[in-house]
Image 1 (cartoon, helix red, strand yellow):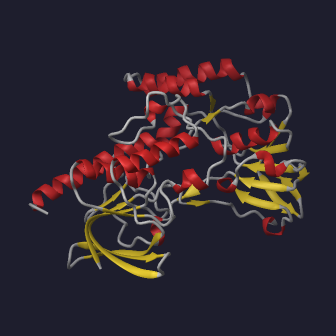
Image 2 (image 1 turned 90 degrees about the vertical axis):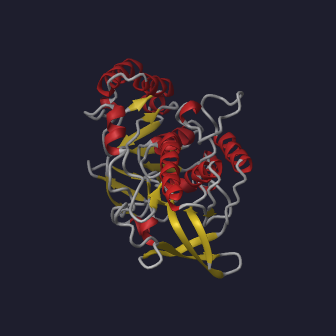
Image 3 (image 1 turned 30 degrees about the vertical axis):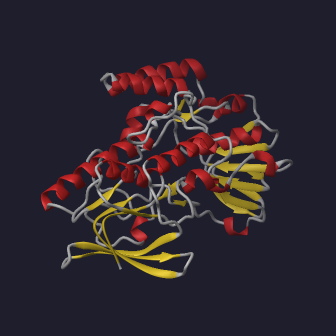
Length: 384
């Protein structure tokens, strides 16, 4: 058994941010990670051309800025280098290849009892912690929806987290299901290299440029009303892209910033996908009704054959698989019960970071709030 004051589960940006904030206050902690590296999503489950969609000023972790020569929109390789430098700077030593099997609160000891499995030694490790920080992220596990006939599709079926680049799809027909940032950028990556590409768009979405979103965030930070900022963004987007409804793309009634705040759904940052749609290099299709062999049938009656299907259909939290007694903080989907900005705290020393769908800026805000709260409790406890 290892007794720790603070146990952080997850060594992605969320867990590392908490560790750094605790280090700054000399509060001892232990951080465990199921993968064999930090920021595994960024290293292992992102496509090659990925760049951060927000300007670097909105993507810093606590207490450490990016180097001055860092580009405004950071490529994933450069972000990973920043994470590595962050780990080194704050002397963070995660216990890798350690997955939490179960966790529950002990009313007698007033501590969290955590059972973990060391995948290297195949040993079970028990931790007891006064404070528990859930930092496993909202992107723990990819979602592939159930579609009639999908299991009998003879071609490749992958989640977008397994997609790397167009190289593996030369001469094939690919259907990308999902119209978020990943889906639209994967469709661009394929079509811009000559791959026959279709994309399923099932719901209204905002399409913006990086510059517009950067402008919107700056205007909002200047305390302009969100609805007014949204009006500006939609007006400029309409000027930039024109009416996209004839291409199967409809804007939501709610503005892009308000939609993000209310639902967590981000605007799509265009990387050139719209132009390829307009030119007919990317075919836009509606919801799928079923799959027969390699033929995909759509709700509007259309039918097309494909060699591969890429599901860019999002992720889910897996915290509820191992966390018991977390109902004060998380709902049945493993996401916070309370609305932002009051989402990060549960009962009995339970916290979460990075589950508010607010990106890296939200992670930084969460980590600072959590650690400040831990410090206030620790100070009341006396020396440790």
